[in-house]
Image: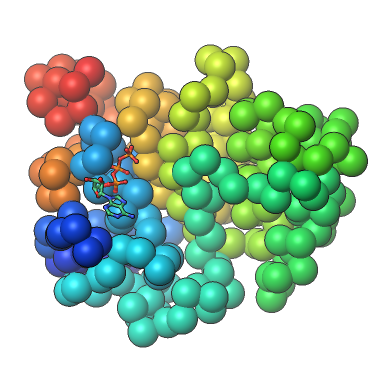
Length: 235
Ligand code: ATP
């Protein structure tokens, strides 16, 4: 059984259905990407998985590590070891770096050591007492990942971690994704519009278009098939 199994998922908002029969699997220790254009349904998929208030799931099933997520309260999902790093990264702006990480650890059942996060992210060590709102976008993204990692997750869902970041920080985030996957055994589902990031980090890719999974491809195929990229990603 896969660590994460999404089957025949239908979900949407008051304004209408957005996801139509979405199927996806992520095996333990994999890095998988979900790629698609603006508005294709990537964030809606992530939010359905973690039981966010919106969207409303209308059909299908979502199983994580054998647990039925649709029957699990949203606030209990992180305790199963599944953590979302949302788009636009939502750190607490008035809290310092240390406070942000401590707060995340405080809410976890079996947190990692806060001090270890500073060894893990030396950039954050240099700004422990800085309020998050005074950090750059890349630094906030690192903090958001540290907040997730300190909860000791089995799997992290990363929603567009590189959006709006300068190229050298994008490289750093790619390295972090590699490290937490390879050295720390965390399984990753990554949402991206930036195909280069997905190619650099993920083993396998699902392509989503207008709420339908239209293909599932290896990194090699995605790299070579320009027609495919053009059709579904516009690049
Ligand atoms: P993006 O990269 O722009 O975030 P996406 O693939 O993540 O794209 P979603 O955010 O999942 O796309 O949006 C899919 C569709 O659902 C879009 O048509 C969007 O307008 C709609 N949508 C998203 N959030 C809401 C909401 N809270 N209420 C109503 N419609 C929404």
